[in-house]
Image 1 (cartoon, rainbow, N blue to C red):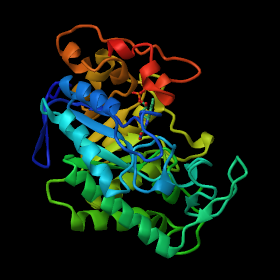
Image 2: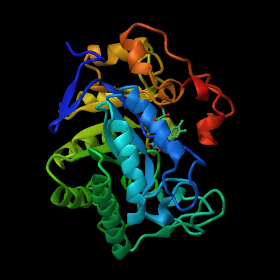
Image 3: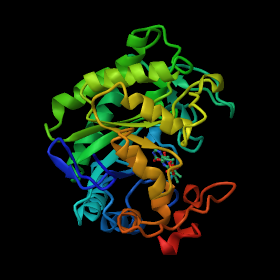
Length: 353
Ligand SMILES: Cc1cc2nc3c(=O)[nH]c(=O)nc-3n(C[C@H](O)[C@H](O)[C@H](O)COP(=O)(O)O)c2cc1C
């Protein structure tokens, strides 16, 4: 029976345990140039020293115009590779494996990044801006930027990439009929909405080394749980190696409803339900803080990996303490929002992490 402390072999990479650090942008540590800072290197080195099995490094922008914030890390320029390679080295010192999450915000680029954000279709945003529907040439251009980013991630020493296909960002916008209103080959039917990601995966598979891990963070309820699962099955057929199931674009009424006895969130439920329909490994995430919450998910075969986000922000030694039966530092669930969304050095647990 697998446990949270069992290793897992993925494409020849031995991942020493089932704990994943999910991608989490460290806001305001960088600037509009998107370079890695010493603060980032220290942050990831700690989780490497803490022997997290797999660290997915924060959303890193493939294009300056696709950033989700001014201070987001970037991989749109070759000069950014050097700093990123410091992160991959820092993670790997004790054998942890690393993926770099590559990302385009699409319509979620803030005003300071894009006056007219790029999206599958033209529509008005809540802040009064309009999106610009991508032309066919621009679609090919963005797919190529994803490829260049993946090649740079490999050059920077990462074991793989995670494509950000969740949380309402560009790829998720293509998949959801709520944001993809196109009437050409990239919109309308399920097959057409999948075309952006299908072409992207073909491009990546054709150009990346055989042992380079291609992970995908999927908005698993896009636009409903059943279609989200269908998308996951397609992603598996297209050669995705690891699925990380989080939230996507759906109407509130369509959110998955776990049975009352299910002790985790609907996002974890979405991951658990997805796992039943695919053969590739699945990472579940959301609100899992303690080893007691994480262990049964792996032991009962509900998931292959468990991602603990804020829990790892407040305790880099999480898995080492868990294995020894020691309590982990608690996340204080700060309101109105987590300090890492402003500046992680202000997190009340920062010095204890
Ligand atoms: C400060 C912060 C930054 C985040 N940045 C990202 C990101 O870069 N990419 C992403 O896919 N999700 C991001 N997320 C979502 C997390 O990966 C994770 O799904 C979420 O925190 C829920 O997991 P948790 O309850 O274990 O923290 C972020 C969350 C936080 C708190």
